[in-house]
Length: 259
Image (cartoon, rainbow, N blue to C red; front, side):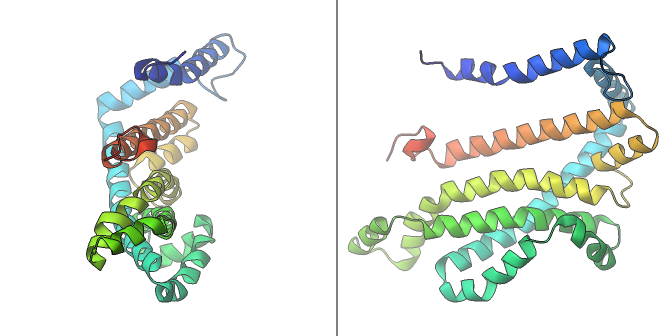
């Protein structure tokens, strides 16, 4: 039986809804204490209180702006380096090993040095986000360029395309599925980096809200911040999927008809 898009969308939410229902039942019956994991209804009431006071929106906007700035900076640099390394073996020899060495370093290991460089202000947080999003985009851009079908390149040469036309009409469109995969991974990494960044010296943001709640044992607020991160991740991934469908409408594997 073939299901339509609306049915598949509903089906994708069955497991999360059942999980929330089970969670609510366990919390209301006392199997899970509020100190360990408050009921979803309690979390919703807490969200409403924070939203009506305006503090939740302020923290959310602050985190979104930090993530957007870091994503724009790190993504742009990574995309440029990925194109450079993808097209040039000399650039790969000069750049790639250093990038891979930095990529292997955990965020927490870099945090003391980043604080020395930038202090605990906005620069530190944006830098960590930019660093986190850079690697998936860089790797997937390079990989996408290297995996373009050589037969397509040969066809372009036969058609007399210039180097610039080869890049814009064959190489970059062929690498686009891999590049967009890197974007999807980097969106998730951006929030991971931001959580780490906002645990140190932040005065606003979702991470600050979680750390402040931990000090006062407000597990309902901590759970709320986790839910917010999850919802933002779902929305960001949905936007990335929509971007894929729009930009790759010509690609048969993305539901579009070939041109």
